Image (cartoon, rainbow, N blue to C red; front, side, top):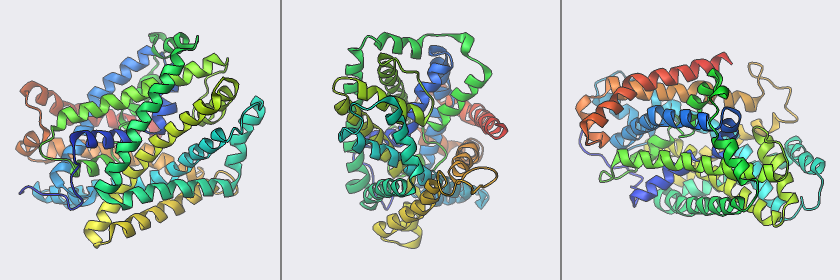
Length: 451
C-alpha cells in the first residue's frame, strides 16, 4: 500500500499528539478511581502491579492501536477496511473500527452526564455555595442534583455543546487548540494543588496510604482490578487512539511517543491520588469510592479549609479539563467516518454525532431519577451503557486489535511501522501483543462478565 495521508490533517508537532493522546487517556477515572483502588488494595503493592500491567499490556496494545491508525490514515472504520484489504484478510476485520466508534459514542453519552456534574460543581464552588455549610447539606447537594432531571439534562447539554464545538473545528483549529490549552491547564492545576497538599500535615499520611507496600492486601481481585484499569485508563479499544494515530506524522517515533503518553497518564493518576487524600485526611474524612469521594467528600473538605472556594474551584476545573479532553476523542472516530464516507461538512457531522450522543445521554440522565424503573437486562439505562462498553466492547476491541496486528498483518509492515530499532525490544513487544496482551484482555473481559 502506498503512503496515505489523512484528509483531516496531521498533528503539527510530536508534543501536540502526546498532549492529545494523554488528554484522551486522562479522564475522570484518573482523578478518583485509580487513587481509591490503590489505597484500598495494598497501596504501593497495587501501584507496582499496576505499573507492571501498564508496561506489559497497556502500552503494547496502545502501540498496536496507534500503528493501525497511522498505517490506515483514516477513521478507525475506514482504516480497518483498508488494512484488512491490504492483508488480504476477511472484511470481518473492518468490524474493529465499527466496534470502537460505537463504543466511543455510547461512552460519550453517559460520560457527558458525569462530566456535567463536574461543570455544575465548578459553578457551585466558585459561587461559594458550600461556604459555612454543614456536611449534611453539602452531601445532600449531590443527591439533589442527581434527582433533578432538568438540572442533569441542562449540565449534560452544556458539556456536550462544549465537546461538539471543539470537534467541529477540525484537527488544527479544534482538537489541537483545545489540547494545547486544556492539558497545560490540567498539569498546572494539578501541580498547584500538589504544592498546596505538600503544606498539609496529612501529606505524609497520603503518601503512606498510596505507596506503602502491603502485599497482604494484594488479593486476586486487586490484581484483576489493576489489570483491568491498566487497559481502560489508556482509552484503548474505543477508536479514539486509532483515530489520533491517523493524524500522526511519519517522522514521529511511534514507540517513544506511546511510552511518554503511558507515563504521563500514570503520573496524573498518582499525583491526583496524593492531592485528594492529603485533603481528605487533613479534614478527618474517610476516603469514599467513586462519585461520592469527588462530589460529596471533597466538597466537605474544601468548605472547611482556608481558601477552600479557590482550591475547590481549581479542583473541579481540573476535573472538567480532564473530562473535556477525553470527550473530544470519543466523538472524533464517528465524526471522521461521516466526513470521509458520507462527504459531510465536519461541523454538520460533529453536530449529528453530538446530538445522537446527547439523546442517549438524556436517557442515561433520566434513568437516574424519573426513568429509574426502566431496566435493560436488570440494569438502568446508565449502567447498561457503562457495562456494555466497559465489560464487552472495549476488551473485545482490544483483543481483536492484538490478534489483527500480531497474527493477520504482514510481519514486515508491522516491523516497519512500529519504530522500535532495537531487535530485542521489538521481539519483546511483538511477543506481548501476540500472546500476553490477548490473554490479559480476555481475562479482564471474562472477569467483568462474571461479576
